Length: 614
Image (cartoon, rainbow, N blue to C red):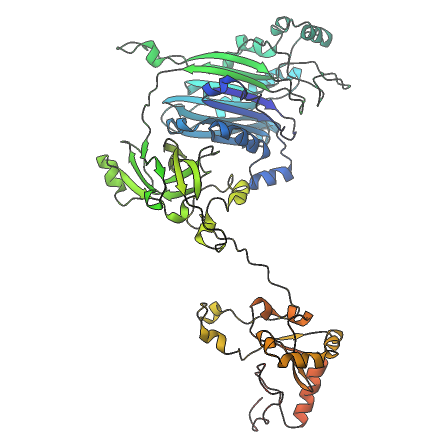
């Protein structure tokens, strides 16, 4: 287990954290879990609002870096600027159960979360383990306040379940963070001399935490490795130089990692059970700071532990059986078997993950684990079966993993070994709204932004086709007719739907100068209208000389919604001319036609009979 603590001082994440996580060494292959505790992450109001919608940048960074090494985010908790992330190799996920989180504020008398502690507790192969990340009060004279705050955190944090309700009830506790303990008595000149001379042991006995471990009852049983690295606070940002400001703060080991093993119960080891089967042991393999990171006034600290214990769980709660390769959609059949005592839920689901996925809800697709005979299969220990639809399967070649997500425990209860999916990609040039458009490649951009906060599967949110149609051109004064869906008619293309023109034609009113420009070319347009080529597209302009046809190359034609296939016909007229003609036709006993088509004569019928409104 690797544990990292870092007070980042509201800084942006660095470009590379591989050395911090010891990913560039052979130790990575042996590491099974990684716990990362951060303090003073930027939590200003605008940053918190953004982080509420999207995953914070620090969490994104660690997920991006660790996922290629098959580490999956098991759980995370945040309290303002204090964040805790726990990762594990994907094949350990079914054996990490009973995952819970908690947080305790101690700033401003318990009302503010700039100080306090956040925790993640879980069962690891049947052993209860708790990770506690704390940020305690600063300054040399606040040692007693740090003691009281730590005691408050231990008292306030309680978990549900039959075992390990309190932090110290767990079989193993890792306590780390910016604990803010300082070096007493010695002046700054001697401290810097000891650091420069590499005689750090002369500072250990004056370290407040070392003193407290032997005098505070609340710290009884906590262990820490030797401090063979220079104090990690306080540095000038961007350098490896200790504080050169006017305050000249004394260097101190503020960033620490400790652990505590629960004392064995009385009578342990009797009754035929050897100590190796019951006792948990911890060895610290590495405890160091990383001077190469200079974005903060603190240096990060990392520790690697070898934890040995007898496994109390050797089978996952759900065993999943799948073929070695899916080369045809009908092969996407999943059989699974639930263990006795497994708390099945109708909201459980089976996710399909790419190898290298980042968290349990970073799925490519999923299917609900709602087989009709699910309860019978659970009672009689039979295999249930579900199947992925063809639309939900990723196209192309790749390695994938199936995982059974338990809604009751909010964790993955079973996984498969990686298997191959080799399905043909959809043909190029196919319709963008075809079902193949809902493959995983389409929604990658959405997943990057929304997945961390919207990860729960939902039938209504699984795949939504995004329209790629060009946006509608904006015509001033244009009122579109109701769509065929509103009218209750078929939207399917048919010869009958193309034969007749609509009776009610909307009008576009153009400015005077726009129409005058086209009246100059009226003769040319009239001749062009008589040619057979002009019948493919036309507009009608009502003038005194009759109807004129407008060529498709004109600006009017380009502004015609029918050019976009929206309307089959429309009428263009000038406001002044339209009002004038209506007055003239009224004086002559004629009324303007209420319905008009491009082939109608300009004249209209006689006036309606008396008593009838036009």
